[in-house]
Image (cartoon, rainbow, N blue to C red; front, side, top):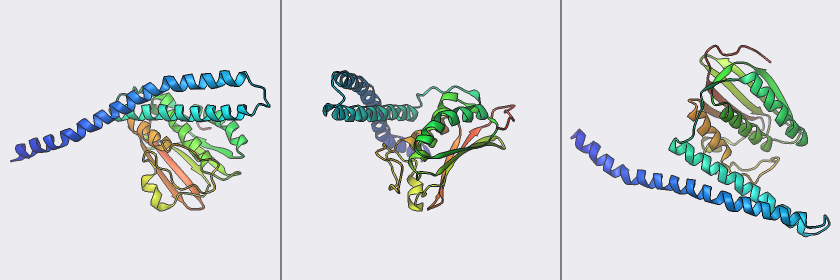
Length: 251
């Protein structure tokens, strides 16, 4: 009886599995195919723009084309990355990632953007080393910082810090923005999901950033969670496996 049920369940699920695999293949192939025309479109707009005087009204039109092309290119890259994560076809290096060094680098790079947007980027204590892919850990933190910058009032504060917590290195990104309504929190890592804007710095985003961050963290055997309170802010917590002999340097 048990073997028969297992066989029937397998036959029932097989079409769904095949449909999912076909969908993932389509997304990956479509993303690849879109890259070339988008690159050509951007190059053509840049050439056309160089041939115009600064006062020409067509400059603004070409600026719009360049901005939308860049937006589409980022969306295509995000979809391609998600399809690879779903298929388990993304390569991950397992290295020691010193968090103090990485956070210091991000503070320098994102600090300039924070200044432009009238945001205070605060760096808290940073200690420990994670076991993961350095580029992918950096990508996750950039996504979280960029997301916080877009969901905070001008003159607000975003705080980044890292601590050793047992066998984990815990990295947190916290802001003092308007927060996320409780009913939206269970969906915040879903693809294309965006909570209603509440006096944000900017919008027009794809809603894929947090989904990508979650996929990259879990691909490195980590965990990610989010908590938020209205009018008090949002906190995203990333737990990554601590590397053996993790650095105890504190900045």
